[in-house]
Image (cartoon, rainbow, N blue to C red; front, side):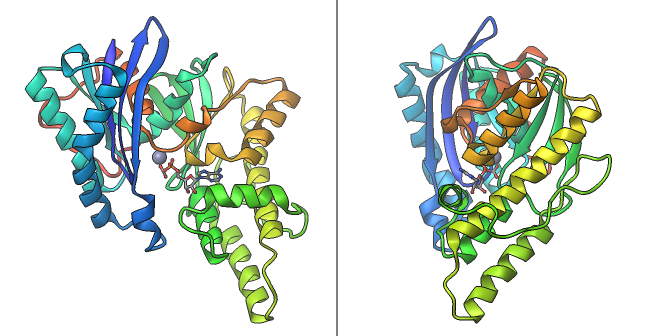
Length: 338
Ligand code: KG4
Ligand code: ZN
């Protein structure tokens, strides 16, 4: 089965043609038009500008995805689209475009949850994870533990009570003068610094739960950076990045350990979301899993951030489960799993 998928929940307009044959998932094309340069001037995503940029890009990105895959609309079996969560105006561009395309071509329309999509990016791996498993979704807008019981039966079992981990990285990077979104640059800086230069508090909320709070750690780091400025001293950027990364990765490992004690890991741990590209987090989770004798999965680096191929992968399983929609489909900015 071939799927033409769309993603427009935040600041990337993406279209992809994906193929799914007997459990084997392949990306035939995956075009991502990033708006990062536009939003960087404002230090973050401006929703109204994002919607306009999606509107301008979506048709060209769709044409490019079809052409790069060597397919025409006639070769496609279904259209999948991110229906939420995300920015309402941004989501509506993808949903409206996909609805129009599905209606005019007579193909089924599959709404896909963006977070489920991030998890599904893992299904393109050589040895993909099979449910049940425990996903750790870490992105700019989300940080949660999700039990994937079947491909389409998911349950949120832990979450951040305030900021997302990506947001914490991005805000810290911004205060240190790095361009938006600073997560990837902070990752590289952390490799050059001393992870034990500073002690930041853990984001793991104590106890038998899988919840986090990143606001304390973020305030702590930002206060430290300001203190250097007030004293007229240069901020030791690499050391701050390395110490913050140690605290964040350590918080995730602590909760993974709690999850092991709760016996909810199933077939393994699956990383997902933009922050799953972080080299220190990948290494930390891999090392933890090896020590515990459990399997760890993470998406290929080019599928960690927002893209439509991941929407195609989840769309396939939603289609198998009969989760299609009619022309009344609407975007839901707060769409979520229990
Ligand atoms: O999943 P995503 O593309 O968008 C959302 O759904 O939020 O995640 C974007 C986030 C941003 O916060 C970005 O800074 C972060 O992922 N990110 C990273 C790295 N690459 C992207 N954070 C840490 N290390 C990285 N290498
Ligand atoms: Zn995302």
